[in-house]
Image (cartoon, rainbow, N blue to C red; front, side, top):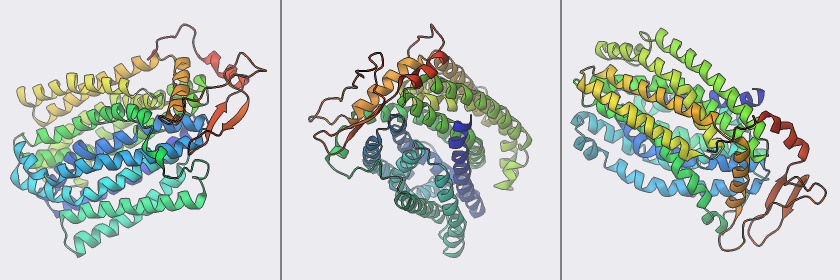
Length: 507
């Protein structure tokens, strides 16, 4: 619990800071007017579907590699993975930016209101630089978090937030840039955060052990990263897209300005609640990855169990919070009576959704830490698109429930997702996950065409153990040193009794 809290606590603080930044942007959109609020909400939804979810999902592919490499003390692998992920995200940002440039005709073809589509286009085009900034920011955060460096992340995020509010006043209030000014302020805030984080990394020297110059190895050996990044991206996108597709469906309901604006407010509300299970998910992903990389399957299993209990508690708290705030929350964003009424009706349903969302989000973190993103992608596909989407469309349009019907569909998706996630985690063979972690950290450092995968040597004095006590560094004919962690037998024996006999279902 203590080790998990050291990561999840500061991560939650960072999430709250980032949420505050998003809320400030929404408040300024609401200040500009109902059209700007609806257009900004629609643009953010489109950006999440086509860009932010993709960049975030691809970046998470480096999480199991870095987490397990840090546990195995293969520090150079962290630097190489950071390089490769940044290059991957920059490449992905190019076609995404082209889609954002043509957002208006795309939205019109989807049947959206012309005025709302025009406002959304203005916001999206001004947000294009943010894609390339996030290509550096996401990998940098994961690089630090998988090493347990979380408090500096929170401090740098807080410092950037202090500049976000005056930036909005300057660009929106003083220079009268309108909806484009809100987007530009968010871009500058991310730029400030990158500068602060890079300054910390350099001044603290946290990069020294893992530093690898940008070279040929950064452009090859991408196989393990791609094999993790693609299914992780699919898993993240499937969930993100469902939320954002709800905004698009709102545009097809009667009075789209009110329904889209209300959905934007509710998405911000669920984003606030999501900070806590998401932080728990990131924390358990790091813990599970570190423990598997260090050959401690029992501790990885304990981290999973503790995190799931905490997630269940978070779900109950979130449900109570949503019920208590159903009448007050919408007033923070708008005074429109119709928007407030829609928000108050759907908010309790959103609270019920968190009973499933918190455990399933945390479970996704366990799957990421153990390098099983394909399992998470399959669960999200089945839950959100084979269960949730048909229910939402049937109730929202077929049964005439409208706006609340869409949220009942989400409730069905989250519930089924949580159940499937719990089954998968319960059947996990943690000894098998240790072997997979060993193979992952070896294959990720293998340089294509130059050397084979480095073997793990056996100890001449401890023949029953795969590793030799201590740490051995081997110089090979590549640009980096390969470091192999060797775990002593007493560390392994300490944790093996925690694995129940006969629990051999491999995931």
